[in-house]
Image (cartoon, rainbow, N blue to C red; front, side, top):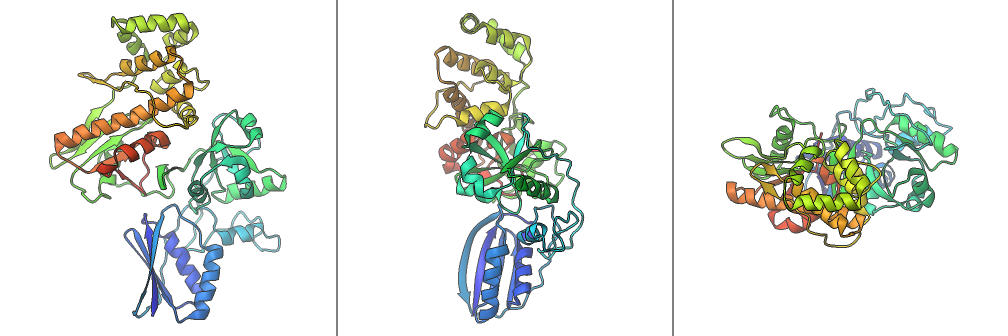
Length: 469
């Protein structure tokens, strides 16, 4: 009899199956491993008791977690086993547990050896890309925290088990978490921070040096981040160039191209609509049908001075601006004299120190209740009505609404706007296949809102294609 494990694996990357093959070989187990689309099949001879015991022991010690792992089903089947010789491509992933043992053991021939290359997933190792990140014990604005001592994580941060697993996975992505440690809050001036575990040889050696100096963390300005967000058991890649699926060239427009690549993963690759909520590339809604693939709604670039002029020419909103100017003259002057983007503008109105999407997003995380205010997200014949959004936020600011509650409401409103627009597009084009993409999904409020309010439409969130550039 054979034990057959079917492992859901939401990626075409072959390193996880390669780790399994390496452990099979080392334990001399009569077994095979094969990888199919979205599945790895491990077949083991249950009568090979010695090999199975060794394999189980080695697996518990050396088999890494992967962010692409899903459910595992186990059955017993009366089938013959042909031992496999699975080989993997080489990937720019973190050092595996075996490599870390060798690097950190003073008695090892590879102790602190920066030339060590991992070959423990049946790969032919090659030199990985140069890492130009610089590591330091000193925090600077926008720095990512590199965790040097995982045993301290529960003391430093409030983190879920799923976030912890993602952080320590073989992919070692960046995850944003809540800071728990008061000293770290003072050092950074933050309540939330991006953190990462050692993700390559250079960062590993940096953490060894830091830990020898009794430092639980150091900082770096991540030049090429691999960012994921974990929402309701969903681990989603926001941006990455290392382990996410590489895009085919299907369209010259980068947003349409990403859309078409994601569509191919869905159950209906011929028809789809999509919400692209992107800070980098702007907000747009896309349609693919038998006629064409294109953006059918594309938000105009925000121009603060144009919006203020439009509000000044509106009989109702001009009074709102006058009241705002009288009550908050410094804020109004800041708006009149600077060219902020939409997120910077909202940060100015909310009196946040940093003027960015991330600052606004972080402030929204401070609210832990349910249900936000109704922020206007309207469209006119000319496109999205930024003046209604700005006017709505100013009205609540004048009413004395708590800043974190107002920030939360803004992101909830973005989620509701996306849902409403997609429902209209579904009706117009008679398409049910709905895709989500864009780096604004880094904000878990938008993500959660769409999961809860749009769940009957079964929106598709790609598991292995990054949501944005």
